[in-house]
Image 1 (tube, one colour):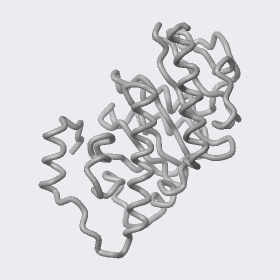
Image 2 (cartoon, helix red, strand yellow):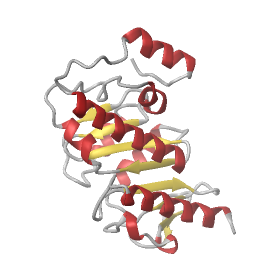
Image 3 (cartoon, helix red, strand yellow):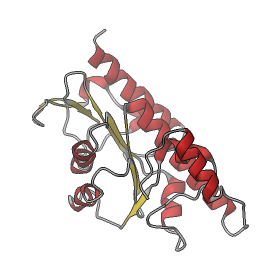
Image 4 (cartoon, one colour):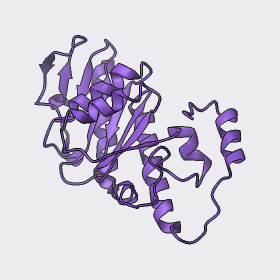
Length: 216
């Protein structure tokens, strides 16, 4: 089995796992990942994470030309913006996960630091998450907003839409976006309770101990 074949199967298996656990639904969400030769595999537009066919993933060569598979997600500009600005990115995952979307609608959310410091793990896996404003689905302006961050954030939250996370590979990106959703759920569960979050000094300890990329 070739490395690309393994990657195709891994993308579909991870997508199915996300779908089966309710982290995305219907035909929402998209995944892209770098191939061993520097190209891209991308989930097709209008496809369900629960029923992806490895052979039908959109395939792009190193110049960005589609050379195989079905038509890719309409969010390709968003994915491309992460690859262009974050040289370490090997995969990008975008979900419409329920708790993250709900938390993005809360008036007290910090635009520069979307997730409260409930546990060390979101700090470790995501750094600081930027809340971007609402854009129409597929709007190229989303890509412009990501480029405007100059590669300083590995994760953003699209208001009233869903999270987008870049990782070193597809497993890392999926793990990070799951942590984002879990932390948003914790934020909603503890909202208005006066729950004790990590203090600034504790967050700094996590950042230093685990060498976290921390913008601001």
